[in-house]
Amino acid sequence: MGGSGAMGQAIARLAFRHGAQVTIAGRDKKRLAVAAEAIGPGVAQVEVDVASEAGLLSLAAREGGPYDHVVVATSANARASSIPATTLPDVQRAFGRYWTTYLVLHYAKRLLTQSGSVTVLSGSSGRRPVAGYGVWSALHGGIEALAKAAALELAPIRVNVLSPGGIGIQPDRNLVHHAGQAEDMASAAVMLMGNPAMTAAVIDVDGGERLGTWSGDSA
Image 1 (cartoon, rainbow, N blue to C red):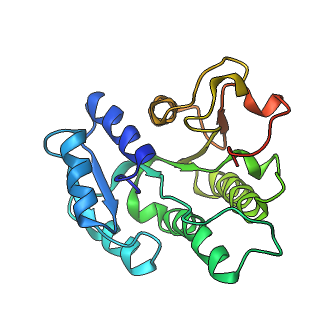
Image 2 (image 1 turned 120 degrees about the horizontal axis):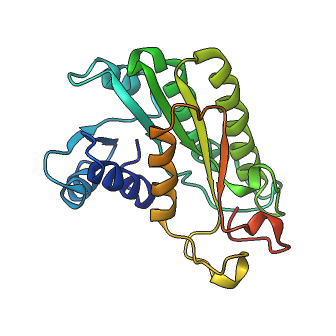
């Protein structure tokens, strides 16, 4: 889900290269078509609002399911601002990813095989709050807590979280001097899909950024 965005597309592309039959879902038909062509031949596209209950149910009932793995890589679609300056519509847009995550987990037993997995995205501000990113902190912290609770309740279905650092930031802002790329997230996501021992994990893919003193754009 979110397969037409940069991270979702990178994850889908690497999974495809590893032999997966890939389905990408999102609201924008044109962007889905462009993404599917970039990923590879035979990629299925589903135009659906994955933040709505009706959309998730239609995806669960679609021919080709249940799925082995579901990745929630939808964008947060909100501007960063202080809590006093954040409007309710800002919060509602930001929490679109939370509701998508909730619905996927709520309907996981319809969407997934018994040995399947869900991988969701959070962000560094969930455990390392930064001034000006309060709503993002709540979003990412909430996603991580929800995913861990779901791992307990949905087992043997596995639930894991990937938490990126800054994507495309200056490489000297992390320990390994690496400018984060969507492909970094893809490698970690495919690893989580293929490892049957991984559940309730939160994996930081940030070059050690969280151990430093820098704060700001990675929230």
